[in-house]
Every structure is written in C-alpha cells, then in structure tokens.
Length: 118
Length: 114
Image (cartoon, rainbow over all chains, first blue to last red; front, top):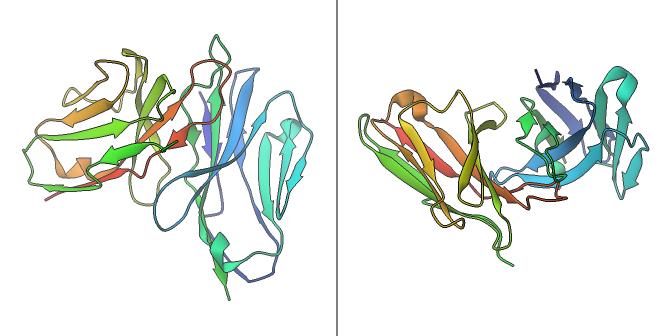
C-alpha cells in the first residue's frame, strides 16, 4: 500500500526565518514520483516540484530546496527566508508510474499548515 | 492556455438531492482525475479517465457517484441522493498520458449538503 505521512500539522514562523516541512512515504513500487503542492487560502492546488525515485540529487530553486533521501523514505521541503505570501497548506504526494511513463493517481499526505507572521 | 476549470464553484443542496459538477481540463490533456478533499485533509483520489475510458475507480466512489467523460474532453461527476457526508471540495486535475508527471488542478467545487 502507498502512504504519505506529514507529521507536522501546523508550523508558525516569523518572516525571514527558514522552515522545513517533513514528509515520509511508503511504497512497494521501485519507480515512483514524489511531489510538493501548495494550497493557498484561495484553495487551488499549485504544483511546486516533482522528484523521481532514481534521482536523489537535491535541488535548490530560489528560496525553495528539497532533500530526498531514499534510505529513510523522506522528501523534505525547506523555505529559506520565509515570507508572508508563503502562508498556505503544503501537501506532499506520491505516485506510481504506468506504462507510457505517466503518473497514476496521487496519494497525498494530510498537509502542513504554514503560517508566516510579519 | 487556460487552466483547468470547474463549475460551479460552490453548490449548496439539500440532503437527498442530486448534483452534477463539470470539469474542463487543459485542452491537450487526455488524462482527467477527480479527487475529494474534506476539511483538514489531503485530497483523496476518486477516479480517472484516459480520453473517454474510465481506467480506475476508488472504493470511496460509492454507487451514488458516477463520472463520465463522453467525448474525451470535459467530464461530469454526479452524486445521487446526496448525504451530509458528501460535503467536501471536489477537485479535478488533468495531465498528459505519456511522459507526463505533473497533474494540474482546477479551483474545485465546494459542495455543502444541508
């Protein structure tokens, strides 16, 4: 069975602080993809990043960075120098692949509510 | 390119009534997904289509739920004899079927059953 766990329900930080959101996943697939989505108060899910299971190279994109560790089944997300506009619910998600190389259904965690105070 | 659109954005209905939601995917996307999200939870998969074929349905999708994508473009999700437990945000997403990884989500339809 596939499962995504986001143990942090809510995080509150002051603007300019760094914050890391944790994600732990379970899957029996050997090939899979991991995602982070952002859901601002408006409600629409916004895609942030994807990582495939055979690429453990971590990445930095602007203020965002990701740490994928297959050995611990974790895919953590860090925002550097947080801003008020970063306030949202962040979801980690997992998907297998089908023939043709497209992802299947997304399995989401329960989300982490990030509140960035001015 | 307009994103995924969903109509209506909000629906209030009385228990026992039928409701239908519509999703228009990104035009070149041949995969379409439906998810349901309740308060404080992540989205849960309901069903997905590749073109007009419904390829998978979740056990969450009871007999009262039916989804269609008759021409492989827009999709409808109907809930018959609504119950209060059906109150949720219904999300639609689309993607390409080959070498595609991201699903792009619409704004959702919020259903309230009174």
